[in-house]
Amino acid sequence: MTTSTQSAGDASARPASATQEPDSPQPSAPASAWPALWAMVIGFFMILVDSTIVSVATDSIMVGLRTDLNSVVWVTSAYLLAYVVPLLVSGRLGDQFGPKRIYMIGLVVFTVASGLCGLAGSIELLIFARVLQGLGAALMTPQTMAVITRTFAPEKRGTAMALWGSVAGVAILVGPLAGGLLTETLGWQWVFYVNVPVGIIALVAAARLVPRLETHAHRFDFAGIALNTIGLFALTYGLQEGQKRDWDSVVWSLIAAGLVLLAAFVWWQSANRREPLMSLELFRDRNFSLANIGICAMGFAVTGMAIPLMLFAQKSMGLTVIRSAMLMIPLAIGSMALAPLAGRLTDQLHPRLLAGIGFAGQAIGLFWLGQVLGDKTAVWQILLPIGLLGLSGSFVWAPLAATANRNLPMRLAGAGSGVYNMTRQVGAVLGSAAIGVLMQNRISHHFAPVLAQQGAPSGGGGGSYASATGALPEPLREPFARAMGESLYLAAAVLVVGIVAALFFARPTHSGMRPRRGADVPAEATAARG
Image (cartoon, rainbow, N blue to C red; front, side):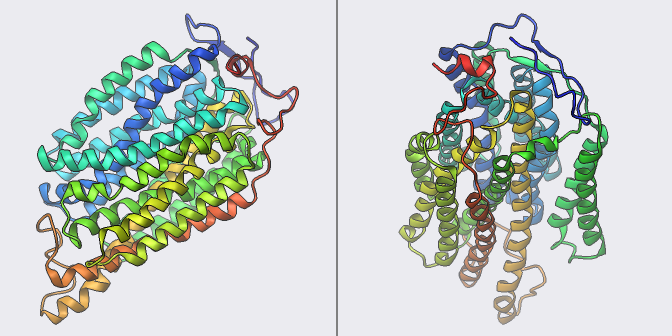
């Protein structure tokens, strides 16, 4: 195996040694690439399930812990924020210490934190445990994409990414259904307890099946870490607390400080002459840059859709938790059904075509869904746009992931995976915060005239909202449905950014469509060609 080094002529780089982890086997053979991917997919599946499973239990957590909507939204936002901040670092850690080792450490942290979530007796403790979960997920996620990039040949990564992407479809189905069943029968705590046995199984599978891969030495950019961490936290916290604090000067100061610190982070990455946390070399590849814009929009929309839809089903339609979760079945079935086809087409067709169709379907589906939400809406009217979301989503996940990483050199596989996943989670964090603010705003707007007519105070946006699970009083159901529908329009609008990004994709140079002789494909990927 050859040693990877950075260009001696690059003033911003320093030589990076490449070594094998102790007792490391030779690069994985074709037969070992797929079992390794399946083993890591178990843990990745658990992370995604944990994101969707909580949305169904939102109402039960709010009542069980006697808290309000803003606080319970932080159960999701805190997880996403803790998930996104370390991703740049965890991608580098995988490069330096091996993706298998970092993945397994993250899996242990995530599994233990899941048990702590179930034991939490207050909203504050639950949010703290969710932060630990997010940290564990951050260590795990970049390693899955890095292993795909480093063990599958470029022209076969689309198929591997299709499996990676189809896991999202399965999680979308299993998460809400399992969350509904567990919440109704055993209590909301079990949406977290269920991760413990799954985590143990995933740990055993990873120990046995995931190979040890080449490692690369890195320096850590502590200034960059501080700027990125504080900037993201200030921006997200400001957005999340804006409605609650009536957009006072403190909120705007936090938002402004967050934007300034993130701008300073980008400047520092370009000025750092040693080894920046986020190598701007990655963004020299046009497809990588555009794919990051697209996945940010997708992360925003997917996270922003779940909570309004589940609350609408329970509060306006009066559905049980499990029946609310069943509304997501068409989305999951559509995603799973087309994922293999999307993977094959990713290795054959221009990514502009696939991703453009996928983003357009997602935007249309969310706008359509927002239009039909009402307290008298028939279930079939909701299932049709949800089905469109499932079918079109298959043509977003795999093409974006494969396009983002296909042209990257192997020495940047972990860093590229970290940036890509961070961008996706930045979108999810902003989606959770922005949709949470918009929901509260629209609830207050639509509840005010109804409550005034009844002679009730309107300042709280509906005092009975968090008092009990189940449907709202009849006069509030239609206003609540309108509020949730209008919240979905923001997610639909953000997806238009994804459509524009997809239109500018270039044909990949390392692909099954047009192989390139002498491409940067090391022994790891060559061995996996088969």
